[in-house]
Image 1 (tube, rainbow, N blue to C red):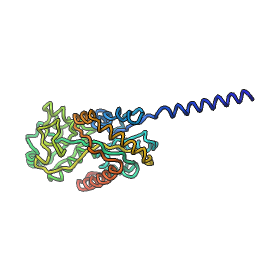
Image 2 (image 1 turned 90 degrees about the horizontal axis):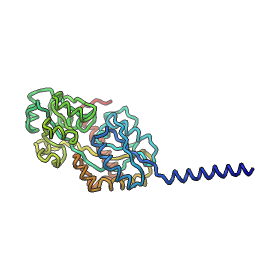
Image 3 (image 1 turned 30 degrees about the horizontal axis):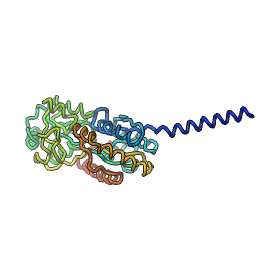
Image 4 (image 1 turned 180 degrees about the horizontal axis):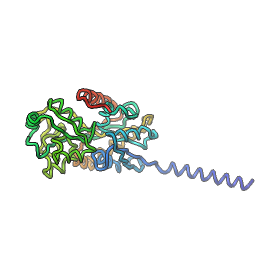
Length: 321
């Protein structure tokens, strides 16, 4: 009996020690990104990971799960435990995919909980060497004379695709969308002349612009980019506003407690508000949102953006998948 009591006591002590150790060591937090390493979304997540870890007192890792315009990553987040340790990075592509990707297993608005929106990104209209136009209005005239023309994007539902279709609807040009698997091969298609132009993420296009391989005619942001100070906005170029605002926001699984989401929001707001992070974002043609949107503000924004892109998808006749 004494031996049994000793064993039971030892087991109980071991279980208690394991429990204390588990609580003493915070769980790892992961940010699931729906794009490949080196892309804008990946850069944004990695820029704030260290600051986020300091605020939360935990290890933060960035997990790249590209596929289907962010759908693969969002489905991982949807199925994760709702304890704040799995966070999904979402963009305008996720909002457009609410209409385009009917086969997906989640609703951005109903199956994921918003944390906040923290950064804005711009696209730049680039043309290849075969295009002679030196401005947007001249490009429209040239393409109208040429007839049916191919334009590139980083994929169906990407910011470049949405910008291109908005541009087509605005100008009435005969344009055919050619999707590539990411921005780099799409930009290369403009360099080689496979496609005539594209609205590229600015960071992906910068090396080719600075290398003289492509020309930048305009940016989609409200103001000029510090990295491209001589490139006008679309409004300055005579096209008015083409409102394709790409953005960086974060979501967590449904049923994640409000207190957890608010804690995460404060941590993200602090990280994106750091001066060194803002400066590095700007170098990568991203701007920290000032102020960021909190969980409820981001919820309203998502609902509006989903409705906005549903109309564009319908008007442009983008195929539903």
